Length: 78
Ligand code: SF4
Ligand code: SF4
Image (cartoon, rainbow, N blue to C red; front, side, top):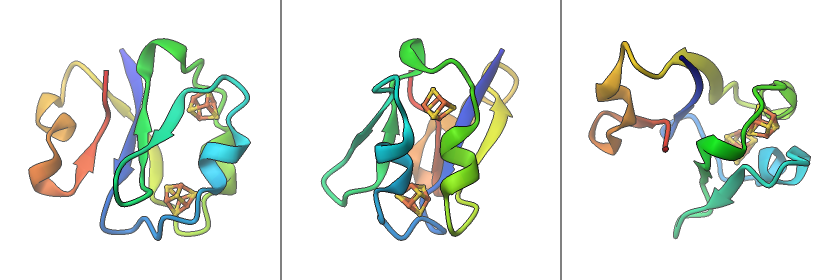
């Protein structure tokens, strides 16, 4: 299953991805970095296009469960 992965180190918390998502699938954490609400995401790629630092990319949600953990600097939230 495809999902969206967020590189938290590359993210500069500009908020452009959140503004670009018309599905309301991205919210912000305490550091103004995006959190994906996966059930709302239709994988349209708009947020990936607008991100100035390429911090967002598509990834495989099921095959890389470790990516969901914040400890390695990336996450894709359910
Ligand atoms: S891929 Fe599309 S629907 Fe999913 S978070 Fe990005 S802009 Fe929103
Ligand atoms: S557009 Fe990119 S750099 Fe800006 S908040 Fe979203 S993920 Fe971070």
